[in-house]
Image 1: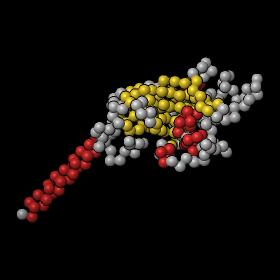
Image 2 (image 1 turned 180 degrees about the vertical axis):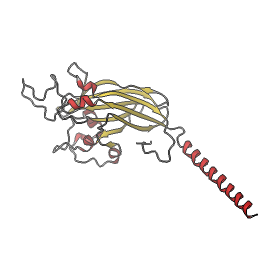
Image 3 (image 1 turned 120 degrees about the vertical axis):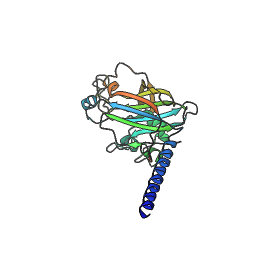
Length: 247
């Protein structure tokens, strides 16, 4: 009799454990339903980076713009650009002029951005060749995805460190100007997009100017080997560490 009770108890515990496990799995899967994320996958060209004067990874920012409301959300921005860490200079808008113009009010000098919306999306400058980040959006929503990138010290004939005709020095070691990539997307799972090079982003006389990409831009076009934007459904997880925002 004792052994029968023990067997029954063991079976009950096992069934209860399986039931709890299935409930947890069901809840995890349920949490991913009707959710959509935009994922950005970028592969950096380490050879091009190594050829620049400082051989440091580029500064870049990723943000999205709602086509209907024009709401802007930063997805990711490199640490140095976000907090103004420029070795004695409090801000260098020429590094990422468009992001700076859109997201930093009145272009005032700063030492640390205390706003949580920036700190939450700020990360160390990626040094490896592959980088990935994502942001959650409403399914079916339409966005313009923007990526701005600048590699310091990537001088060439059109953008030299010292202009021998005017004797003007590249004060902030910008080299070739920041480049703007763009992709218009629909947040429907399974879609994939490749952003295209839209324009130059420069800082002149205290203002951001958007200009066509001219013949003077050479190696800057190859800082990123590939850029892909994918629309995905979050993977079932108890805690989604990769989720940047939820709105």
